[in-house]
Length: 210
Image 1 (tube, rainbow, N blue to C red):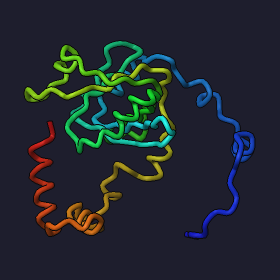
Image 2: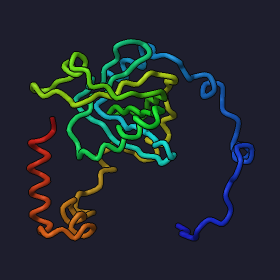
Image 3: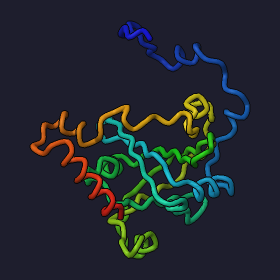
Image 4: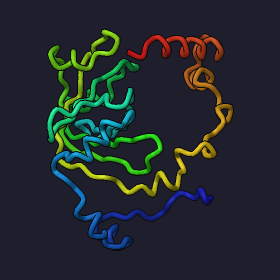
């Protein structure tokens, strides 16, 4: 692969679109303004999604969310509720939503090449009556992200098909990269050894999922 830095940049939408074919009828018409039965079923089966947000200054972020299938609530045709499980407490996504409510979601189902995309407007909610519905093992999330749906549609499956994402043959052996403990040791120069860090991570992650 050529690693030469690019020289020219496409600087207008017209110029960009001139490089591609016109979208087909299905791609042009598939966007829904509400969740239909198929969207709801997709969310019900999905154990994993990614959330795209941006801060007030336009800085972007993408963050994963995962739990047992059906962990995302769908109280009505125009709303999804994503409980905020225990994480690293950086709050990148939630802080962005406080500043800028626009969010993009993509839902995955293991084994499916189709992806469900939702674009909408989010708000952070801490109402006990809502959060109690999303408790796991008696542990209630601190907040939930409630998204009002503006657009919902199935995304083209070609990216996952090219990646061969779900096949056993495509899995990369774990020893192809160092452990997280070794990576953090190298990046942050922490006092603990890589082995100590990794053991600590494994223990904390196992005990702190909720």
